[in-house]
Image (tube, rainbow, N blue to C red; front, side, top):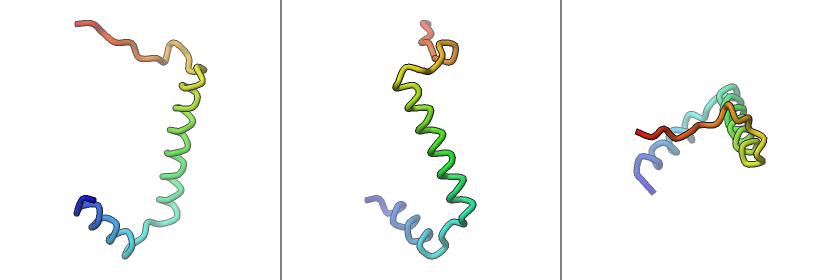
Length: 55
């Protein structure tokens, strides 16, 4: 494990994030998982797909 991660975890242990920050993070994570799930099931619309551009 990197020293940076240990220092970050120590900071979070001393000063945990507020409930609002935790809720915002949970909502962002849920939206991202929802988008990934929709794309995995093949329900994502064709107009929203990214196409590779040849140079």
